[in-house]
Length: 283
Image (tube, rainbow, N blue to C red):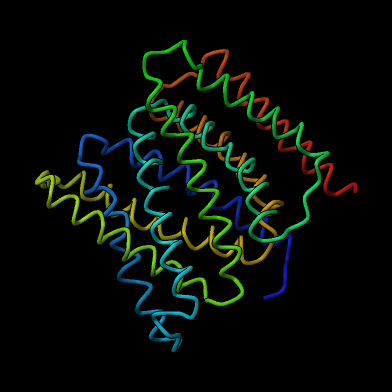
C-alpha cells in the first residue's frame, strides 16, 4: 500500500473524534467492572469483522502472526490503562496525558521502523513532555496513580501504533483488528471469571455498551487505516486534536472545567504538535 498523507491525516482525525466519544461512553458506565466494559467494547467487532473477512475471502489468521499477536497483547495493555484513566480522572486530563504518545512514537518509529528522525525536533517533544507534567502535577495531587497509568497508556498506545505501521506491509487492516478484538476479549473474559465480578447491565447500560462497541469498532478501523496510509511520526501529531474534542465533550456531559495548569499543559502539547508539523512540511 502506497503512502497517502492526506488520507492518513483524515483517518487519524476521525480516530481522535471517535476516541473522544469512546471516552465519554466509558465514563457513563464506569461503575461496571472494567473487564466487562472491555468485553462489550469488542463484541460488535467480533461479529462484523469475521463476516467481512469471509465475504472478502481474506485469510482469518493473516501472515505475520508473531507481530499480530504482539499487537493484540500490547493493545490490551493500552486499552486497559486507557479505560482505567478514563474512569478515574477528568476526561480532559486523561486525554491530554495520553497525547504524549507522539513523543514515544517519534523515537519508536525511528528505532523499529527506521523512519528518518531529526534531533532538531527533540526540543518540541521535550516541550510537550513539560506540558504533560503540568497536567499530571507530580507531587501536587493525591490521585497520582491514575496519572501514571495514563502515562503508561501513552507508551502502550505508541507501541501499538508503531506496530500497526509495520503490519501494513503484510496484513489487511481487518485481520489486524480481528486479532486485537479476540485477544483482548479472551483475556478480559478470563480476568472477569477470576474476579467473579460480572454485573448484569440494565437496559440503559446495555444500550450504552452496544453503542460503545460500535464506535470502538470505527475507532479501530480509522486508527489502523491511518497508520497504513502515512508515516507514524507524521500522522501521530494529529491525535492532539483529541484533547480539543475531549475538552468539549467533558464540559458538555460531565461539567468538567480544566484547571489553569491543565489548560497550560494542554496548550504546550498542542503547540508542540503544531510546530513539529510546520517543521516537517517546511524541511
